[in-house]
Image (cartoon, rainbow, N blue to C red):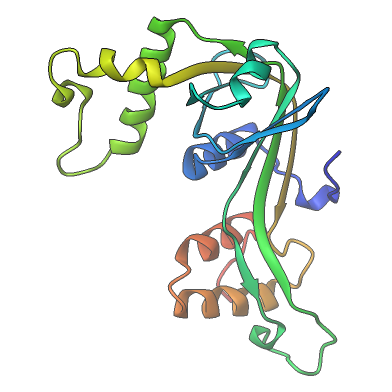
Length: 211
């Protein structure tokens, strides 16, 4: 069970989808009778299937994780953004206020039972993944550039699976419990360090308005 506080929980399901789309790379954990299988695959979250969506991913065929996926053992996918350090010296009333450093971040734990993909489903997943990653690029890459048979030659090297999400736990720790003036100061310092993504996320979740 992920420890969190009510004000750190995302308010909209779309915020989970946005985090998965942005982070992509995560950790897959599958406990089993011999221990724990761990992998670091890329994920796509299909929100059109299932109440909480369906994760779709793949791992190397040579990975020992594959045999536990084939057994359909309950697993957990974890995706976490890099976040960033927040110094209390950034707060406008420092050092008068008794504040401590912290780390702002977003993380989601998605629980489910994996099912192996057929070849056509794996191809569709790869095309969706590439389309997502190439979107907005000036010269987007397409799988047709692999040439005749290029995709087919590579498919034996990976195994696809999907995992309907049975339970979702999330923690967006972004200063929601701090004073708005202090978080505005933190946002300004983050922008000075070119950490615009974290600054934007804090502004959104703390609903900061310019004074």
